[in-house]
Amino acid sequence: MSGGEAGGPLDARSNLQVIMGRRFEITQRDVAETPRDWGPRCKVRILEGRRIQLREEPRSGSLRGGVAFGERDPITVMGWDVVNGYIRVRASREGGDAQGWIRIKHVLAWDDRRFYRALGDESWYGHHWKVTTSDTSVWVTRGGRRWDEIADELVHMALADKEERKHLRQVRDMVEAEGYTYIALSLGHPYRENDWEVCSDRCHISVAYAAVMHEGDMAALREVLMGMLEQWQLLPPMERPEKLTRCRKFMTQTKEEARPRRDDQRGLSGSYTTRTIAQLQWRVIEKMITERRIDTIDVELEADLPEFIRRCWERDVRRIEDARERARKLDPHQGTLDLVGCDHGLGFASHEMSDLLLYIGDAILHWASASTRAQDEQGLPAGPLIRPYVVDERNWHVTRQGDWECTRTFSSKD
Image (tube, rainbow, N blue to C red; front, side, top):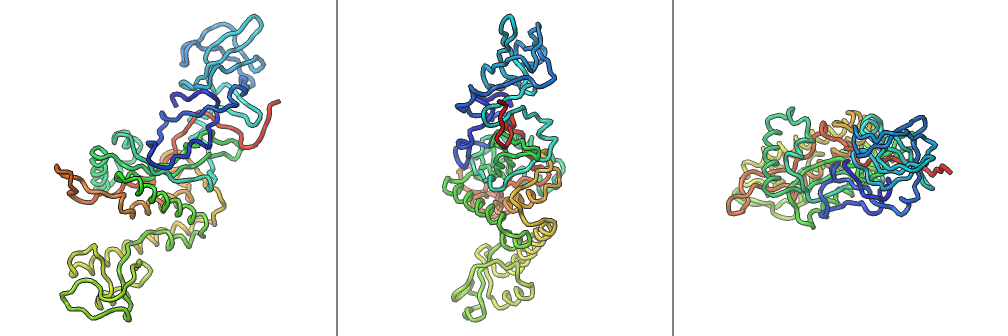
């Protein structure tokens, strides 16, 4: 992080709920920790066993020289702006005061509630973190980054197959021409078993880059995804595949509902039900096709209908079975999600988090407004459908947000 606003190491938790439309996705350089009224009262000391000299500038190689200060010397913070990992302080010794910069990793701060210490990349990426599931939420926002910035985070793009590379090129063209909608899972305040948690509440996992949407569509999508998040927490793992997997729906009729129609007449006669068919056996669906009791507006020629239905059915059955395979590895949810690692892949063992992210990504893929078509010179839709890019499991990661972590429970140095 390159800097932060003055005030103290703890983010104002009530002011940072990013929902939609007003903030681009948050990158490390964007993070600013919000001032709090207790900031001037926060005390600080040099860590036990260390003796350090102040620096003239917030960078290495700028030592002021002179005496070194230790844990017993009074230190006053001049401002909570963090610059290159340094804060500006005034240190008092017999004979006068000295001002300069000190690395935050060398200090411990506290107020009347908590201890605070530096959170560096080694601590962030080198530890197992937990997330309180009830603190999670979904961000649906206007995207604001260039494609090359997005691509830098997709470190496994080189491993993409031919179809995925083609899709990525389409998404790149969409981003550069029209912009995009950014969708992420907000993680609240990740914490460690040793009772330390991240001060910032901007930790998140990028889930998808979708077509530009109207505000109403963004709000509706967020509502759907928040509903899925709530359902995911409540459902036993083995009930999630059938209830949370989004499958293609078809217009279907029972034998009693079907009405005779001419061979050249397209469309169902009489009442019908729109439903998924993945739970049906293929022989049942074949009979419905033969008796003309299943249809969809997505296929123009009735002769093409059987192959389209078969392809959709096989795909959805396979997706549900993949979800069941994941569910077999999971225990009933206990209210927390493990982040075995924060780097790309999330340690490849964050099974519950992976399960949740896959359901969210699946729902985004099946949200109509998340897709678009390229525009021609007149601004009219042209070319193939561009579906949202849902971030691959290998590219899931949580970038460190903020420079501080704090104790979760009340503590006092006084």
